[in-house]
Amino acid sequence: MKHLKCAMLIFIGFFISTSALALKSDHDQPIHIEADSVNVDEKSGTSHYHGNVHFKQGSMILQADNILITTQKQKIHLINAKGNPAFFEQLPDGEAEKIKARAKTIDYDAVGGHLILKTEAQLTQGTNVFTSNSIRYATKESQVIATSNGNETGRVRAVINPEKVQ
Image (tube, rainbow, N blue to C red; front, side, top):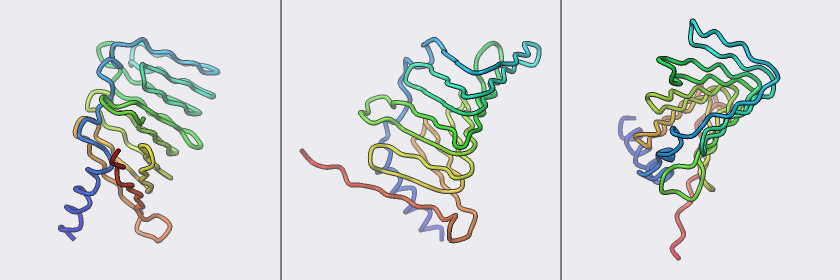
């Protein structure tokens, strides 16, 4: 089993290249948010956006039914998006293809650079696809960890296409 996990991690390396970090300029870009309504609590550092929410910062786009943003020291710390499904996309530095994700719940740890997809999760870059019940994508380490719920319909599935030599 340990060898299978190790082989899977090596295999995953083909899915997302080692330069798969978000554009370095993204965090310097203004944040644009549209929603039907918002509740801001400056004391707790939370903003809860409701209804067809669109979040954009640089190449990062997040769409969901509801988004909760938690800030610390006036910087985004955590984004929690819920939808049926919620969608995320971002262009990694040095890549032509965007990372695209969807799940019923998407958590984005802006400080640690982790994208956590829960329930009916899918992560795509180009023609390569992971589907699972839960997917964790560590952007800084270019690492994908997908887990299943153990039954046949909840198994981890991966489609990895070889790069074409031109």
